[in-house]
Image 1 (cartoon, protein in one colour):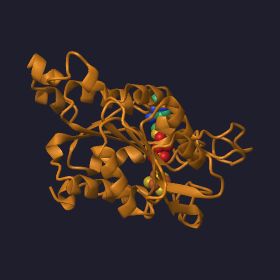
Image 2 (cartoon, helix red, strand yellow):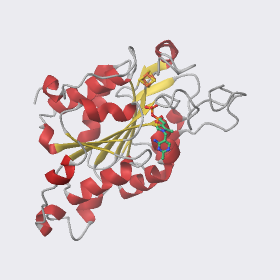
Image 3 (cartoon, rainbow, N blue to C red):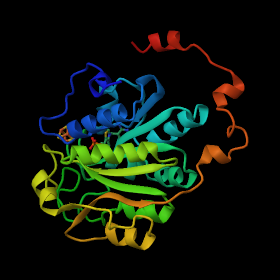
Image 4 (spheres, rainbow, N blue to C red):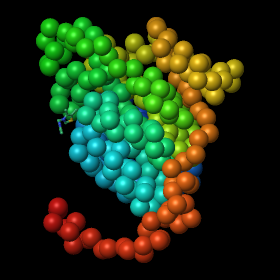
Length: 282
Ligand SMILES: Cc1ncc(C[n+]2csc(CCOP(=O)(O)OP(=O)(O)O)c2C)c(N)n1
Ligand code: SF4
């Protein structure tokens, strides 16, 4: 399918200038470049502005509960690991309520591409502090300023044993598209934190803020070095974009005795028509 053909036809309700538009375009471009067909792709979305991605992609999709994208994506992948599974969620969704799932999805290393729209705020609920909101920042939920230390999610991922850790930016769509392609091609859990300005409620992390600080990793950077990766994710003032860490690691289904040869769906042959149940949600 061509990139345009991945448009669902629904008009996005994101605020004009929101970084989610660029992520949408990067995903469609990546799926098209990889010559994927929407019928072979499942997009699992969380609750948030980021989660609305589900409405705009002509793929299969599952809009989960807040913070529960990764367990649902795990279920999808375990039942039919021939499907390409991508996940779209926010920093609130993935690093707050879903933080436990994040760590265990990394440990499990299923072949899933996890895209976190990291706008450092709860966008959909109109601007409360999230786990990546800076200390001191005043928000609706922290009128005197955030007291907690912000989470460094890339450092968490590295230390939990992630084999693919990358950072993209919605101000660099082509670069982000290439990262998403790398993530989908990676045989294992590919985690991409995407810097995504929230132009309505974001206080500090604007396009201008990022444009002054970002730089792209080039071939001189060795992304197989854990030490390099740790240094990159703790850098101050500069923000590295690209694949920060990538190593080969056994993917979960390739080791699972019941499904390493055939998918669970092929093994059980149990396909149930749920179209009647789906009608009740209309
Ligand atoms: C269990 C549960 N708790 C809280 C909420 C309310 N809620 C909806 S979206 C959201 C936060 C959204 O922020 P984020 O995940 O960062 O996504 P964004 O909107 O910024 O893309 C919250 C707290 C919910 N829907 N379900
Ligand atoms: S509130 Fe922020 S994240 Fe949500 S659509 Fe608007 S700009 Fe985007």
